[in-house]
Amino acid sequence: MRSFTSALLASLVLLASSAFGGSPDAITGIWTTAENKAKIEIFKCGSNYCGKIIELKEATYSADDKKGMAGQPKVDRENPDQKLRTRPIVGMQMLDGFSYAGDNRWEGGTIYDPKNGKTYKCKITLAEPNQLKVRGFIGISLIGRTETWTR
Image 1 (tube, rainbow, N blue to C red):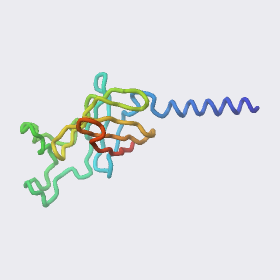
Image 2 (image 1 turned 180 degrees about the vertical axis):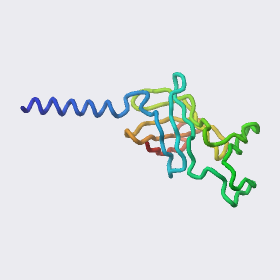
Image 3 (image 1 turned 90 degrees about the vertical axis):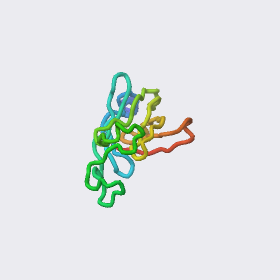
Image 4 (image 1 turned 60 degrees about the horizontal axis):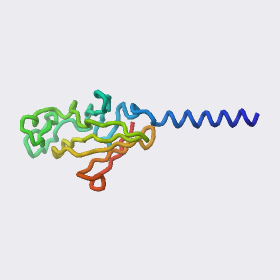
């Protein structure tokens, strides 16, 4: 009986560890950003992983908008490319080019911040089955910021 219990326990541990990450597709799905400001859908794009904004908590500009867009849907108005400043934020791809590096890490991608119109290098770590650590940085990973997203 003891060996059966040990075998069952070992099987459960193996099953749990394989269910948590270990698969390149483990990050696919819908994630809520820090402070519940947006929902991001991460999906496979070719051989890499990408993400787009599918929902904003505040999808329109506030009544006191300083650029005269009160009540209008938010657009990419801070983009350095003037032609892109009218594209809607909702539906915008903001994660691009991530590849699975093993050990629940995705690297080599970029993250776009529509608040300031800048694109940063980025890496993503699946910290727990329902928790992503998203780190955007300039140059080296030490100079950056990490946000925690939840599934």
